Length: 170
Image 1: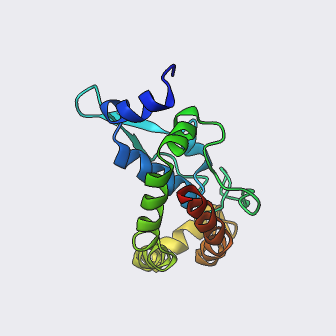
Image 2 (image 1 turned 135 degrees about the vertical axis):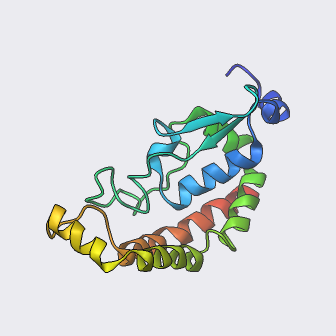
């Protein structure tokens, strides 16, 4: 907490996996995981020295709010690291690495086509009887959104994210 930016950058890998932190930050931005840069971030370690951020409690993701029943304010904002000191410094001290990782992930794993394919595949794997049971349990209003909402969300944020991460390289 008291390190200079040079010390932070030089010693980061001693305390946290840079690859895991970059991946976590990018995923938080792409899926709009606003809670995951605050109260929902878990840290795991294998040796008690080096830590890895882990995703947890994704109720406010892909544009849904924490109750799954409304859209977040992603239309105007990016998640960013506004209130997380660790990730603010990560973006400041490793901006080029963060941008490179973003564009690497966006070209494949976090491309819109791949994200939509994964959601479609998962949705198609759920038996119709399960949907019928959910309808009986919850009624016609199910919390959350469908595939079209996720696609609309991605259409809304990808261009802004691309511009933001491109600005980190300059």
